[in-house]
Image (cartoon, rainbow, N blue to C red; front, top):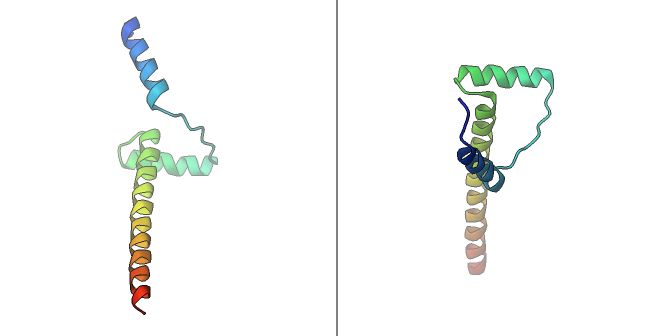
Amino acid sequence: MSLSPEKKEFFDTYRKENLKRIPLEVTHEMYATIKMNAEYLHLSVNGYIKKVLSKDAEILKEQRARERAAALSEERFSKWG
């Protein structure tokens, strides 16, 4: 089943405006690990990579927030000392 010209144009425009492709090179061994983990989670390789990156970004965001809070706390207490 092919897309109508209008739908194809819509999707092409959406991709250009909202998505960024990232070429990724990994070793064959790393790809095998990624593929095995993706299959275990019933995800595509692309879906698995996105899930891992999202989780990592979430962890780093929380870590940065804790570091900022600690720095603010330290700054406040240093004014008293």
